[in-house]
Image (cartoon, rainbow, N blue to C red; front, top):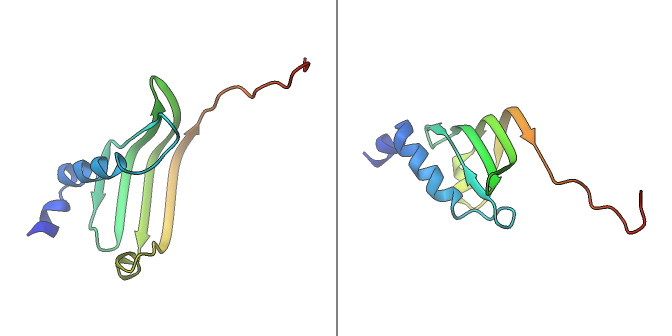
Length: 102
């Protein structure tokens, strides 16, 4: 029953959003996800993944799809069989100039 419930995209999305609040990221940054689809035993798909600091977008990914080995995950190791990433955007602050540089 619980596995069936977390397979539903609205519930899966809420669960991943909760996990993202506990994942360490860049200082002062927030990680968000738009939608999650998963069977939780071997695959997951995240869409609308973003890392922001205030109003500044640091990085975004349209879609991340992964297949993984559940037994290794339960054993404390994440073993990804396949990873597909589409629509990557990474931004950053201007590099700091060395004193006296032009």
